[in-house]
Image (cartoon, rainbow, N blue to C red; front, top):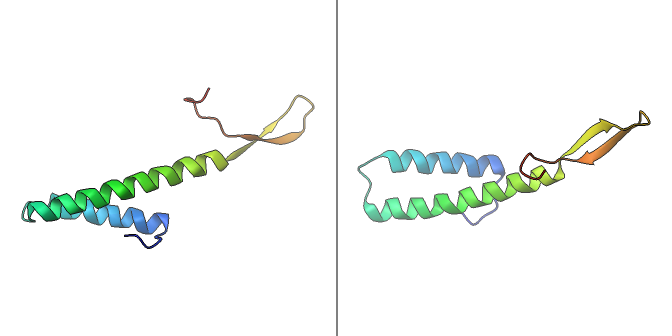
Length: 78
C-alpha cells in the first residue's frame, strides 16, 4: 500500500479490506494485517480531507458589494 494511490483508489482499497474482514473464514493473522492496513488508509484519507477543507474558499459579498474569497470555516472552528 506504500505506493501513492489516489484518494479514490485508497477508498476502494479500504472497501476491499472491509469486505474481506466481514468474511469470518479468514485467519486471525490476516484479519489483523488487514485491520492495520485499514487504519493506515483511514488516517491518510482523513488527513487528505482535512487538507482539502483548509484549501476551500467561499465567495462572499462584502459590505461594499464586492465578491471576495474567504477561508472556509467549519462550525468546530468558530
